[in-house]
Image (spheres, rainbow, N blue to C red):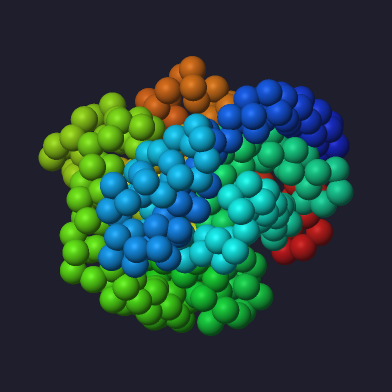
Length: 386
């Protein structure tokens, strides 16, 4: 039965393309009817642009000054809604060049940037060719967490592109450039926080060292620019974010609540991820990166609905490195759960993530485990390249 399903490559690709296009059509309708007209309330770029303008106007020491944030964001135009900017200073740095443009024009360019980043992530990481790759693109953009992130201006696609670029460069034996690309996860680090550690444990030391050096430079610059008062304000907003229900809703702290039980589960996640990465030392570099993404989204206390788009990138890399039939089934079930995340809420998604992470403890052997889906040796995903 499994063999029969695996041989129906074009059928599954066509079905995936059709499903993705239907979902994409719904997302475009939602964007045109709700998210575009209400951009002053719903689009988070107003907070990113406001943070950059706040720092440029008052100095980086005031980047996390909530009163200054509020004044600047509400000054962008009548009806512009403010909420705290909780991201690292690196995101404000990236938005700073957009200040030469009026907010509305900057928003259009920002949207083009993150859509382009999503396409780059697909172009680099998605397995297969032809119809299969088209299906992956439609399903990626059709997934509501992905579309939601693009509609509200979230930088998730930038992190996805950075991770995909890091894999692409590492796969081509360019560890220095891969480490530099990976350092761009500092834009929103919780989405791939454990990827560098998984790479280190799996034997990719040069990538880790370059990532660490580049990240240290950015962190040092941020500390100098923020100053003592700015650092204290940043600590305060991070503490607030850990208590804020929207940032915990889809994290393990959502169903478990705050307390020692969360730290215990986080410790288990890290241990499982690092053991899995250690066992992946002789495997493709795609495997520890996928492991790190899944583990990061389980470990972090700050998970937004849109952040689940990163799991699509993890799925692509897992398929490239050789996914078992069970893992492919988990990816399919996980996709459905993510599409219905507003209905099923956190627990089923977290369980699927835990199962997928646990499955990565058993890497395929050198002789290839029976039932493995490999893009190079098995034509299921139509990939012509090893």
